[in-house]
Image 1 (cartoon, rainbow, N blue to C red):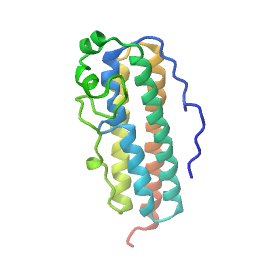
Image 2 (cartoon, rainbow, N blue to C red):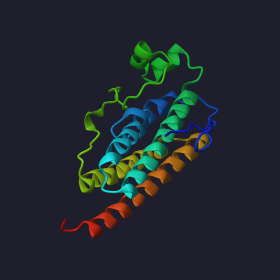
Image 3 (spheres, rainbow, N blue to C red):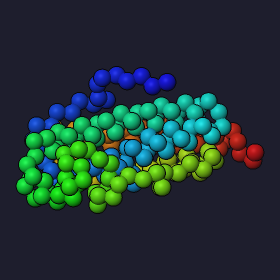
Image 4 (spheres, helix red, strand yellow):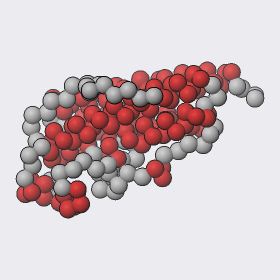
Length: 187
């Protein structure tokens, strides 16, 4: 089903290390509103959508979210590339280093590892799509907060792209929910 193309959805070329930003951006990899959780949420929920429109939309967006995971990991790699042990310690990344070295690992900003525990799938289109709307809004807000913290245009531009995709996903989920509510009302 999946076909991998060897390019990012948006080019990323960060030239300057910024370990403090890496320590915050990691939340969009493994945090509660991150891309990994979104991808898995949508790819799981798709099976119980009432028709092919819903299954296709959740597959499309879930697959795109996997591309966003790749972007976040690329950002994290470029922000930390060549970091010394002292730089990691100064940025508060010594615990990460102790377990993972310079490896990229999905956590939130507090170092709590990614978990499927908060990724919902109820089998009810209305509940799941409503959750998806909330998830996209939370991700959008997180990107806005990260953009506020960032100083480097090489970092800000991919974050702006990712933020905009959250808006697009929100609108597509909203449109589908509106259609379903009209079609299945009272059933």
